[in-house]
Image (cartoon, rainbow, N blue to C red; front, side, top):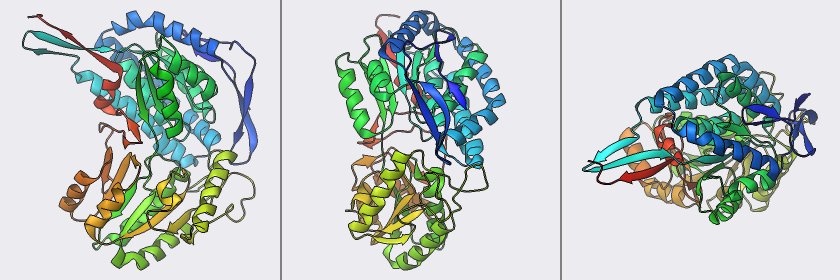
Length: 471
């Protein structure tokens, strides 16, 4: 049993103001795995006050001082990777190979990207007689989700620290363990008192207190569209900056060439990674109509071959994070069937032999782009296959969505892939599996605003000052 009932405020582990706690459930076996304290607005006040006190000195720290801190954090992070991986498996059910692989790899990658960006970032430039200065925005409230817990925390915390901001982190209730370990890492690395603070608790309490707080200068939130909209409303009265990375319903376009079937299989497998709980997941697989029957058969075979089970074992897919998420995914599967979509793999209920735990069958539907399962973010291992007639049709289907977080284009003709990418309204387009920590990440339309990752992520935490007549 993990017992995490202390908050990290002003460089120390402190007791919360209240006594409310929450038991956390291991999604693989439905047993209580630990307990966290649920904070109050008073705890937020203390954390914000600490961050505000620390801001003047930290905002004036040198590039070298901030680099030194980030490098110390890296050494501590590397020493605790195993602890982080075990926590991720326990808190949200990621298979051990994924938790100790891509999950922690992403956190370390964002740390390296922040270090690299900080080494050469231009904080000042001359425009004639004007000096344009990029300065830290102030106290930042960071609100993160449970699906990629270390990725989502590190992509906010490290750029904020690198630019001279102070922070109050509100990690997810369902994935609180890895955030607690990360706070221990920062403490061991010697982060100055008040520069980093963490308060656990409910989004409706801690998130609201941060969003409405007059001494918080900026909110960075990753999560659902509905919560993002509410945060914008809450933040409006104090005119604070709000950076949002919200949902997605990303198209995955496979071109018609000799490798089409190989790419279809890859698209299905990647959709099932992390139990489909990825905001940028390619959940709409667009396949040439002329190859569709063959693609259907292969997609069904690939989905049925995904090994689902206890995440501590040698499996490709563990459970979804909670009973609530399980029920949501099951309701979408039922809705897809009710709408007349063709179910070709998976379906309702748990996989055979898995009566305990929040396990979902890797599921594939065939549909047009009008159904709820093709238009709404399911956040589970549910893929919708859609046929297209020519490139113009594929682009039209890809753009026919309220979201615009990501898209995927796979094909042997890289020039054709590039041309399609330019016409898709989304913030990140992945060509043939491309990946880059320095590439800005964020969405068009209802997928949010602002950008994270690498040097582009620094901009969210900086204000621009013009000093005219500087000479």
